[in-house]
Length: 417
Image (cartoon, rainbow, N blue to C red; front, side, top):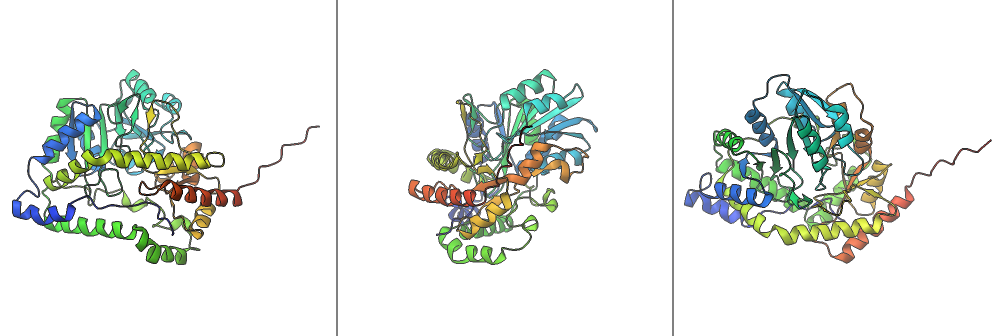
């Protein structure tokens, strides 16, 4: 049976609660927002957390709380979600980029050390695809230069480094609760912070957001239900996979379905509005039940990686004290588009260009070799937690055969003399 690139699940009890919330009058307001903030802060290991409309809205609220002057220098990773540097640039800050590394795909601390200066006010370090970057080294460099560290933890709920959760190393961390994330509240997010005064400022801004109504909820439920349906293995097998095969042959570089980011997706449209009590209840349920599902995802990811590690380079943070949640199992393929095409032919759907080389998209005039390579080679492979060990083995065998069939021959060494 063909394998979808990812599985979207409806949050438990989302429909029944949607029907009951108007009767109870607690769709928008209630005690659960404060409760999820307290539980999330305790889980992350920080003094406070604030529910926000989305991850990117959380970043904008963080900038508001910092009160930076126009022209303040902000450093982001050259490889990442372009919304992050775009937002910094659109707010009038002076954007600088630091190259990523090819192991974690996060910001390279050595590149940051070469880029940062006494003029730097903020460093934004992104943990990509559920694998923490070298955050403790980045934090030390930012602290030494007096810069505020913000952690982009949109993919990294529950991951940790040396026993500390991601989102607790910087002055701020922000998380996404979009439908594909480990915690899905039909949108929304949360900001973690080490400073109660910062939390107070962000909470005031978040509470001033417009209230959401049943029309918003109906749209979000319809959208997420559709995503859950088309990524269901049976529906994917009968309808989606044949459609994908029919679309093969088009220009993959312009394929919006295969790619995770487009130039027209950098706005705040649809990403604002007050985080609701209804969403908080969904999030609390998932936080309390997340551990076995995350553990199963880790087991499957590691099994897939172990079976292919002799032929495929995978994103990794190999420190013994790092726990990754493997939101996406991420490989680097020198001939990525060809591998993706052939994998689809044998029934394995994949995802690429979810993150991008931001220097090219933002026309910075600089080049970052590792970011260029990451955009060119990163391919996400399916290892859903629902799959058994034997299913993961069959997926690995198919991937292995395609990788061997598409391998780029090594150039012979130059003859001496």
